[in-house]
Length: 494
Image (cartoon, rainbow, N blue to C red):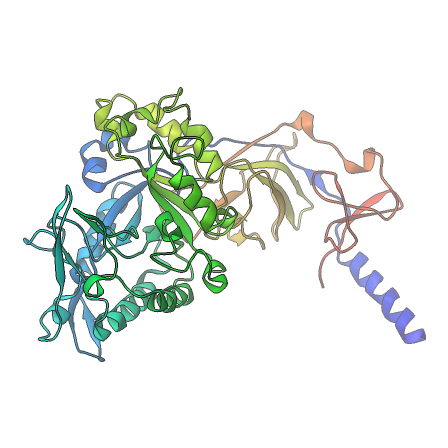
């Protein structure tokens, strides 16, 4: 018993001796003025380049398709695969040159368009596989899109290659700040549908991978893609294509969703159809909390891309409300500038800033050794990559990744924040991330004036009660302030 009591008292002494009793609130002024990295409306590189002077700061992301065959130099069946990444490198460097990050989508089928070579509809399967004597691809005439060839997903080497390719891609690019998000999938445009002039066609000649193979692939993808958030089409909700709707193991994966007909006239269940909204719900109403959500504004009507940025919205819905409802982080809107005669750059930027995360600092205190910051996310989605508050070369212990909308968190930086006699910070804490470009900045709003600063010791306090930076009471397990004899003391870990 004596040993237990002594150990308890020793723990108290250690805790009290390792604390700083005098904490000072610091005034900070900061403002979010730009589209934040990894958020917002998205343009294709050609459009982004042609109108960079006007729209360059109205968006932070650009979208590009990538066919696997474009980066594969050669391969051996059941053996090594050699790459020439220059095709992808050129895309990424071009996008980076405009201070933007990339959203890329890997595909095998692209109906009627010579995305791969001079043959319309040719698949993105690597040439070394196409040259094998027993590899055959089927083709169909796709309504409104033309001749389309289909990868043969019954072929073992293609199945193997697809696994190896994404592992090799992740090994090379998983920490690359030029890439924000990756979209993956199967079927036309990797959007989880296949159809011809007669309607849906799945499984003919092995033109769509089996559900079993899909599960193996996505489990594999989840294991190799550690830092690049990846998303699949909402059309994967259809159990005719895949088992995402019912397979618990698949649903636990932290993948996101993209909707390539966002805000079309019948998008919502309150409209005539509501297929899109139903798909979002089937794939998980809380999926956005761990998986990035995005897509593309509808092309169902010629006016959809033009009108969605109007403050009055379209079809009785506004971009602001729909972005919030679906917790959108990015959305392709490539035709919006041209359809508005390139006259709405300010509005385009405003709509971009209605997506993703938005950080607000509500409290900042320092004791000459450490600095504590209370930050709130007032955006519509969390940040899906790590970012940290920093003072000088010292980063906070806690990452801002995953901070949900309307939630707050306290971060600790093991460095003092210098301030003037008036209580104003000499230089503000910054937010750092290894996943943004060197030319980008994650901003935050903050307007803590000297007149707003209060000392908790002057407020009504309870003996032995702990408080966070907002002055809210917290549990005993919380590493916060403990009030003893009218003094505010910080309890640290040993």
